[in-house]
Length: 142
Image (tube, rainbow, N blue to C red; front, side):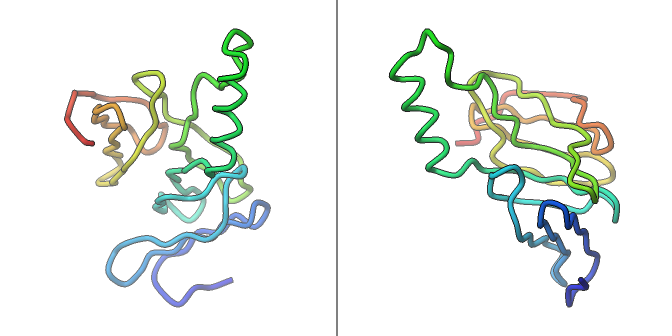
């Protein structure tokens, strides 16, 4: 499927389409593993970086399960919501979070790097090819 604007990325197996708009921003359709796509950018036509947002109902069920029995550790320790997928929908990497509990809330890409901010106030610089952290510093982002 071709989209009307610039570069496109498609992962038909999981129903994801991402395209670059004429203003340089990206738009996305679909979900990844039941999570909404908050933001995305095309790394190349074979890979795409996704910033995911857990659906409210899923998050609510997880919190309720944890509150009913915290000792059972029902609440997942980490929701890795910054991922790179290939055209088959396979996760190539997921970025590690500096704190728990935390999640990425924003990202930008420039020259093979990702600049990602977390809810707890961390600003990370990551390699776009691997998702590995290069640098981190505390920054008030809320």
